[in-house]
Length: 266
Figure 1 (cartoon, rainbow, N blue to C red):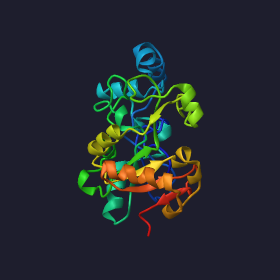
Figure 2: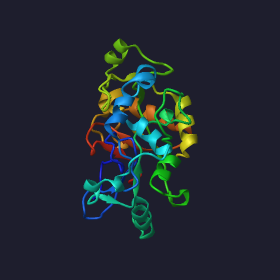
Figure 3: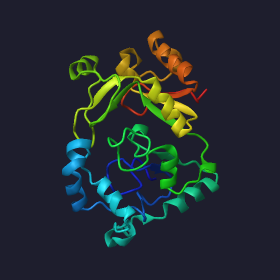
């Protein structure tokens, strides 16, 4: 089973992730570009670090080398040979066999190189179409696109941020978070319907997953049935559905996997 790992080797959660039963452990796509020490050093210096607020993982410089056709790929590294595979072949054959494939991207739409607040963005497109392209999956084989929103908005790094709260107000509301890659405190703001509508459009979303409802409404913590939510929690979800004209199918009510309301299950 391949699970909870990027199909690439970068370790940032940047690239799409997928799950499948293959019985051979974690596999990497042979076409993944390799991040080298020089990429990390470049990412931590100059304009990217001082102005854009790069994570310093080396991803951007490595992507740049790939565009210039000078990057090293996983298939060229001897010690990776027992762990690499052809991801497009695996994903498409799995679907053709009647099985399901979950593809997950972990960066927000508005960090997209093309659709975000340039230059305060990541080093590639991260919308649903780009994620599928990354693993060689054509649009006709996609059944559902679930766009994931937190119950409030966060971002790490520089750039415009509508409705941003002060660090003190963020802390008082219990919304303070630390970036998992950078270790920096995330900026926070209330739910933004304008951004949400644009994200739904750019990703052709078929439904919404809301996470961290329990942070907004403590009474929601651990609830697994929608009818057991209190009125304020339900009103928040219903208002999202009314304003965005799309169903909320999944609701996160805590940090554990089982602390989820799945409204697709009757």
